[in-house]
Length: 301
Image 1 (cartoon, one colour):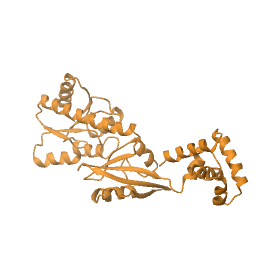
Image 2 (image 1 turned 45 degrees about the horizontal axis):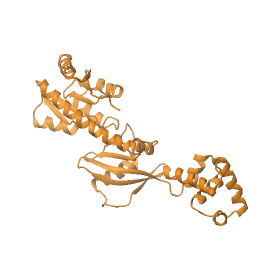
Image 3 (image 1 turned 180 degrees about the vertical axis):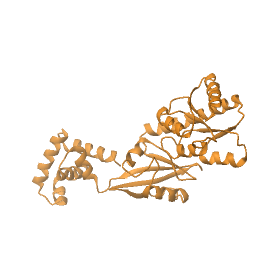
Image 4 (image 1 turned 135 degrees about the vertical axis):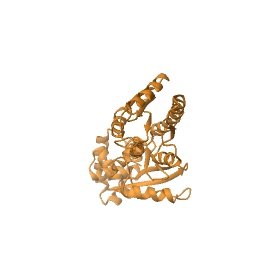
């Protein structure tokens, strides 16, 4: 989580940097500063500011490139960036906005205007962060990509868990999932269309298109457990493979006779496995065992 109301000021001119920091602090905002793009990237990772005020032209790394790198990282893609620039030509303004900036002010700075713009974008960022937090608390596996570039903008913790182990580079999606999202972004499925399956190593991931605001495109992720339920129960409950299979069919409401036919074992063997399942789960009846199995499988779906 970003530090509330902490502003990072980035400018390779120490005097200009100090003036902006002083103006922000006088307005009741906490401010830190960096003297270049590389230093800014390192400081963002450490301090987690709420907003960046960024000089467009710097010697070591331009503000435009610094902003692009921030936007390429899932953890910082949401960070509002206001450009400070003496380059007031339209092409430079467009470059800053395309790099991911939300606003710009021209030099020489009108400090009151800069502070006002900072406060506006801080309020917008807080609102967006509150919405993402609500999704996190609700346990939804959601992510958003940039409609223009296809880059990952943000994801809930649950979505991050589903993507764990996938080749994401430096926070940017890659491989078959990236290709699928790019296709679904440029050619959105019809409303109510079934989720699309993509394989991530040995996992089946369902990707559902939710909609778009024009700038952001939203997707819901879901791990398909079809055909893997017994393996999930085996791992989660420390069961043998056969015990997990018996438990799965118990959860489906099958009696011992049906389970014996499905698994090609005797009803007596089914009962022995079931006794071991009850002991390992610490329950006394089929209903309690079935409830535990259903809860575990549902949590993975």
